Image (cartoon, rainbow, N blue to C red; front, side, top):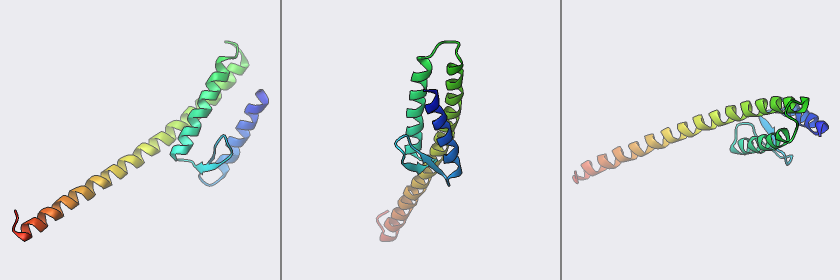
Length: 115
């Protein structure tokens, strides 16, 4: 089992060398700051928590998984922060466009003599 995690570490290191791509657990590549990446990180965290919790309480294996979890959770926070910023920018743009549409329709109504 310890060998599998070493492979995970290797994949994560290789992944960082790729241009903004994240390798999911199924081997597909997605954007590093995408919803799919966040979902994959959540699955990895769940798997690591399960494995950590099944190990002894004061073992080196448990410490190792705690380190892995720290890194995965940090990466997940970065992705979620980016996604929140992206969502707020989109929401702001939608609000501006709807306000503009209301102003334009009001202007058209005034020109038509309705208002």
